[in-house]
Image (cartoon, rainbow, N blue to C red; front, side, top):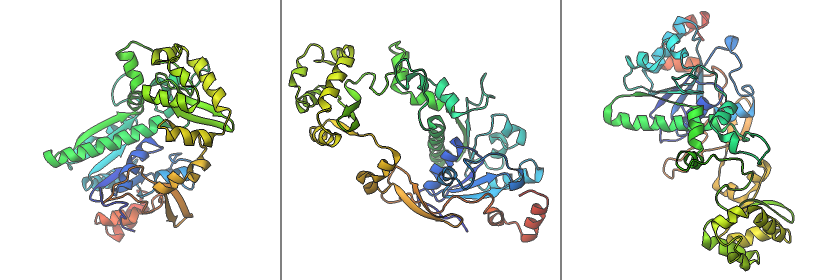
Length: 396
């Protein structure tokens, strides 16, 4: 089946996806969800390693590779490299997450490919960067979480380092790569030239540390674990009402005054222990104990209704079932229905950005390995007899 764009926004672009596992596929999913013709290049079935997320039938793979087409090409054969180069010559973008030296060894690095396609935008994602003392190390999300500082500020004090519950370094590297690709495509409209762009799990993780980096670089302060409480905005964190836990965020002196009134403690506003931000920082533990004592008199729904009405941000702490039962999530239409010809009906989360004129959809479910090989090669102009010859040689 020809390209089915998931949006009109990027439908004029073709992307060659040479990536595996998560960071690269995430970048390409971003482009596919906005309409680009993303062609996932995989090794033939008889040669494949463990390059998928839980297998092609798994929910993770289905989520990550929707809106793409799939082609198999044996990159260990010169004929396979030739076919790939022909495909890239007629494409706008290449995305790869090999170890930094592999693309040069295969002869599919940016400088080589740009000779035949000077407008090519070439994106590389690695664990630690394209050059430097750690460039050749294998990259993995949890390693980047640790080396980038995230695990040192996650969890309870004295608990030891804790990883977050999603592969955030992988995901951010993929999203940042997609952002870089879009910037390069915009720049190409002016210069007419493509370029090589690259990011890494480590760089993405350090960037995501955000204000914690400036606490060190500007203030000389090493951030530590603060548990469920915000390190600088107090009181902000997880509190316990009569029927369970909830989040509350109190930001600014006016909101602090409203919070005190709603909890029936207006005296806190002038209490020397709590009257300003520095005092609340010093006396955080006693303040949190006081807050929990008052919250314990009512259920979460009681407090959430009253605090939000007073302009104090707060909310439930949901598990994933509760997330999708939340009326606001349902109203926002984040879950899309798609039918896989292999697995039947599926429900998948779509893009979190709504473009009113050119919205993103899920136009097709994740493909099987090599599902579109002959279709795509025919688009290159290969005849049936040429396809049969390539297949007999194990090229796909």
